[in-house]
Amino acid sequence: MTGLLWPGDHRAGDAFSDASVVAAAVRVESVWLSALGEIGVAPRFADGIVDEAGAALADDAEIAALAAAGENAGNPIVPLLSRLRDLLADRDPDAARWLHAGLTSQDVLDTALMIVTRDTVRAIRAELDGVITALAGHLDRHRSTPMIGRTLTQPAVEITAGVKIAAWCDGVLDADDDLTALRFPASLSGAAGSRSGTVALGVAAPRDLADTVAAGLGLATTHPWHTTRAPITRAADALQGCTAALGRIATDVITGSRPEIGEFTEPTAAGRGGSSAMPQKVNPVLSVLIRRTALTAPALAALIHTAAADAGDERPPGAWHVEWEPLQSLARHTLAAARQAAELTAGLQIHADAMAGRVARHRDDIDAEHRTLGRLVGRDDIDARGDADAIVDATLTRIRQREDHP
Image (tube, rainbow, N blue to C red; front, side, top):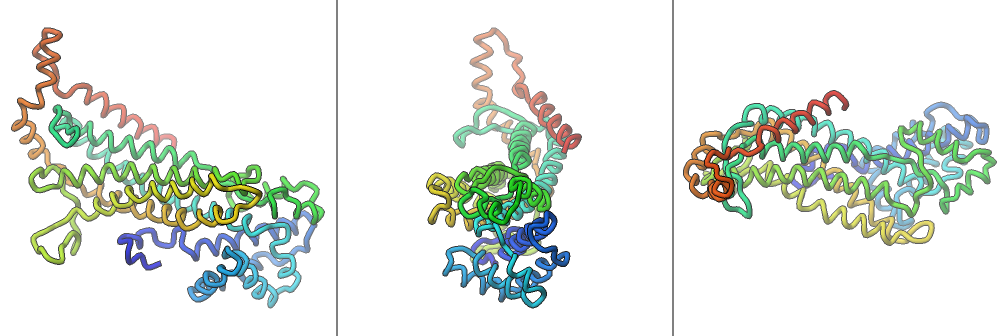
């Protein structure tokens, strides 16, 4: 995954890569086969035999071959199984025959997607830790810094930088809450979602077997969800919400970093922000790329919801297939944006003098509401900062509570 047309994709690393999906699918098959052996339905095979055989599939050429072969079956699990059986047959022909017994390709792919989504969400939350810590520091330093509050692009009333930063932070905290609330269930219900294959193998308690395998994979248990796509749509919503929270910060930084405003400056790095034609420019590239992600994410989430709405029968033709790539893109893009945002907020320069100077220049305009309300109540001593201190304190309390109960 080169990411040529998605600058910054490299920041997502191996998260939700094709290789990670293949590795997760192999792990699902391995834990399932071991569980069948544990309950005496299948022979007990050497520990790790499936994982060892599947390690060969991490090769780039192998993954490319699986991707091409997936066209014939409509999903990558069918050719993966064929290749994995070949690799297993060299070690233990019985293991090759028992591989995947009682499962269907949707079980394996859906469960693998839950594994890699869970891992990516963990990585995103780790980056949000850095964003929140950085914003808390800015809150402490600039809680009382006066600045202009803008509505519909125009000066409105005086606020403080603390109020603005608190709003940024509350958005990130909300996004983190949504990511934390996600559940990642295994999908182990067989060909048509009834666990009929498991029953046919002679498993006395199919749900218990599914629960055991889910626990072995570090996943939650649930009812069959082949055509009940809430685990996917909820993940998409939480990821999209995260990009929106980060995008709001980026949009404010873009506006505030205009030279004629000069309230914010992005952290610098060698070669960053340059122009191919104008050598004097230093563009706010981190914010631009974060905003790009925030603008792209809703369409990806909407596509996943559209697919869920069309998930009929016991396995949908086409709608299920729609989900995979948008979920991968959404997860990787969100992680890259979170890492960009962690760098942005840690190194963000907030120019209090520029903020205060602009407040002074626009004093007559931004005090208009206070003058009007002051006449209404017979006062001329209205605090222009409003409830700014309480707003900042409430956000700082949320941050401390999160630290106490991660």
